[in-house]
Structure formats: C-alpha cells, structure tokens
Length: 126
Image (cartoon, rainbow, N blue to C red; front, side):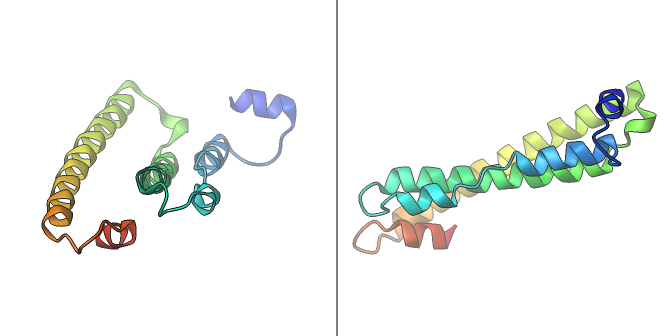
C-alpha cells in the first residue's frame, strides 16, 4: 500500500496514518438517525440504533489504538501471531463482559419496573 500511495503522490503521511484515518472515518454517527426516530413510537428501534452507535464508536476507538501501536516496518510471523492472539483475547473478554453486563442490566430493569417502560431510564441505567 505504501508503494501505491507514493505512485499516486497522495502526500506526506505514512501507511499507519492512512490506516488510522480509515479507522476514524469508518465510525458512522447515528445521531442523525436518532433525531429522526420517535422514541415513544418505536422504543425498540430507538434502543437498537443507539446501541449500534455505541458499539460502532467503541470498535472504531479500539481499532484506531491498535493501528497506532502496530509497527508495520518490522512485521514478523511472531508479531502477526501475537496480534492475532491479542485480537482473540480482546474479542473473548469483550464478549463475556458485554453478555454479563447485558444480563445484569436486563435483570435490574425487569425488577425495578417504574410503572411504564421508558428508554430514557434504561439508557440512564446503562
């Protein structure tokens, strides 16, 4: 990719800089979609879009930090295996933590019923 950037005369940035910019631009913002949706008419859709936006932003931040720490000039098979191991470790722990927090918060929301369902209260609890 570095040779392609040089042939296209794109600029002075390194390959890592372009990958970092790609990670930042890949995070789509769901604020506009949330403004269009009516929370009272479609609370499930509103909650799903809000959750997708949070997960998307978190993924973009993790990807950006991983790209900044990765040294593209000294790529070896051991560093690739180490990167793959870190990915699976982060994936496994994030999934387990997300499931645990989701189950606990669902239980709390179910037991602390305030008279009617409110996505505002549910989001505030999260």
